[in-house]
Length: 458
Image (cartoon, rainbow, N blue to C red; front, side, top):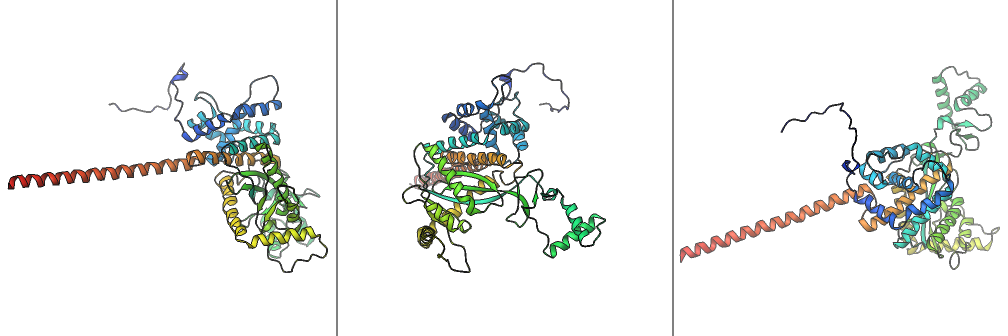
């Protein structure tokens, strides 16, 4: 056999038959996902849904089913940016098969994804989420009676050094120089400005408020303190999760400075609307479980009077530590009753068990969507655009639940580990059978030798 040599420049082929091109290996995970979407008539549904937002004539655009599939690829592959999603779809032959593109066809670019996302309103993404919830209900993966609620912060696509004052448009350096001039200090160099700013920080005078500052590139982002202690422009993501099946009923984005007690009721109402539309009949949310950050008198009383189910909604929210006892002199009796009932429920073993379940399930949804699903850092600007992307990531998580029921895993990387584990177990079984076969051969040789010795002795 002769040695093959690689040449950097080769004469191109004048004509190549499409049948001679490799279609790429078949990926069982994506093939199964395509089969699930085809069974639910997903492509026909989204095409009919998006048709009013396109012109009647002209060059055909990218199919909406391809756009939503690429959004799902971002979750399953753990890619946070649209550029990364477009590159991954163009590079992988198995993902090309998943999207329905041949090797000689160009996959959509990241700019096309941005154009389609901005063209479609937020209501379209809500309808797609409801469609996937219907698929989960058909597979008996939604109960909807007991939900857990929690929130986390997402980094916005804006930097703190670019913030400006709302009243006069000053940036941070101009603001510091003005403060130094008021104190009688002249700032000449960048080092002096940093030194003066650090001194203000040590004295406790360095404070930034959302009422006074904003980001010119993303006005919807809010200044917030992240869990690791950094101050960053961020958004707040709140999940309403079915505690029985781990399905995300609602994934809403709020401003980072909105309190948990103010966003609990809107999230529950939106989750109830999704359930009503997906099930076709009333699926009442009867129990809500949250952490102590959601505990407020008005919130508990509002949950008890929402009218879902018999007697409203039961809350299982622990009380935060307080310096003073409750005072009910100027409060209605309904609020006192709601707080007392919630306190009694949390003293029982069932309430404590629900809290442990909430800590496990809801935090796991953030781990899947934000950490390994590429949703912790947002590369989009505007709260509506962030809502679209985050809701599609949560929808992909729900599709992963269906795949986990059918394949035993809900992500591509887990599917590879599962296949590797099955291969290792198969090798172990084969090795055991081989050892048994070797032992059987040795026993036969021993018995044969024993019979020969007996025959010679006779």
